[in-house]
Length: 346
Image (cartoon, rainbow, N blue to C red; front, top):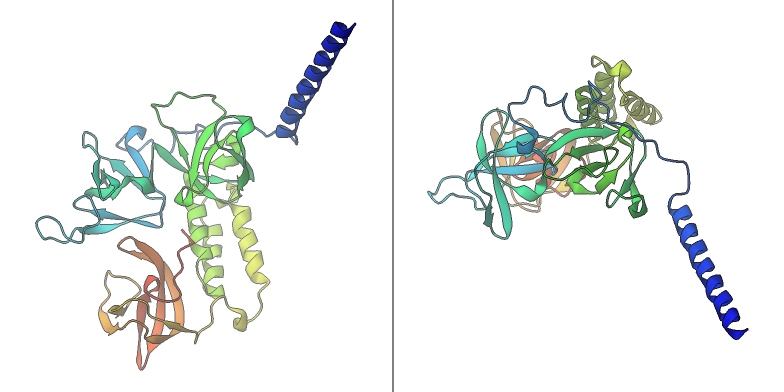
């Protein structure tokens, strides 16, 4: 009798364990079943349509995931090359695609790995490989989307991809596909990075990617009037009637329409800011292209903010151009060198 009682107790305990496991699985998979499907492109094919005109295969594609990356003549962060030339070539911007030059091995320098790349205009140089995603293609999230640490439903993360968020879809040909419904993704500054299985929640159509990039830039414009003008320009782009990004642009316009009067502009003229870098240059135009030097400012100089221009890059840094007044001089300074540094928008 005692042996039978022990056997019944053991069976009862095993039953509880199995019920617990079933409950864990049920909790992990509770809620409406996520929709699955292919990523949207011109041909409804995840990787072929957008790169049809590229001169290099996906194995050599890399996309910049940082606001800006410096292209250099030699690997490393040195200002000058071994021949005493200026090492810096140009800035590679967020979302920009480069070709990884084949048959050139990466170089480690200063605890960083550098790879040699070629820009769309043929310029070649070295970049820090961590701030790029290899085998990648730009896309835009169209619905709130679950993200997983690995291609397994039990690895659900707390964060989610949000509608309008720009991501890249990674298609490493050396990694066997676990399941055709799983997609490896990465986003701005690689946060977050993981897996999704709702492919139909992402569009990789050129039109939609371009609209999302323009929307992100428009949101960085501080003036209400200028931002509204830029948002309306996006809506007037060819093909936007059918784009899933259109509702996001319309929502941004409606949000601005709720702000009344010039006194409620997103940035106030007359605001005082200070300079954070010695020998900061005031330029005649908000760029380094056709601009001329107006004046040099010192660290801690106080200037009056007049207006905010487009986002730009100098070296590895990306920020807005600010129109300022110092004493009787007006001109433009690069925002990264001021107390109003803004690094969050792509």
